[in-house]
Length: 85
Image (cartoon, one colour):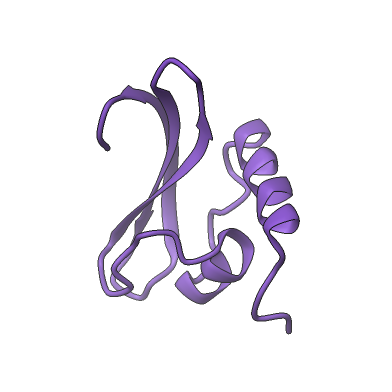
């Protein structure tokens, strides 16, 4: 099992998430970290977020991941935001 991907591999996975809205469902927190990196998420939290894409004028595409009590992904959504997330 690979515990760390390069930035290029994380970028490829983020693009995969943008194009497939169910790709993370059923994964554990550890598997999400392996695929997307640590980001700025507090590990015990049940909702994580990742910035998938930044635009020059301030808009961001943000991935939100919800986990159940066992730490398994139950929902993921992508939203466009301006400013802080």
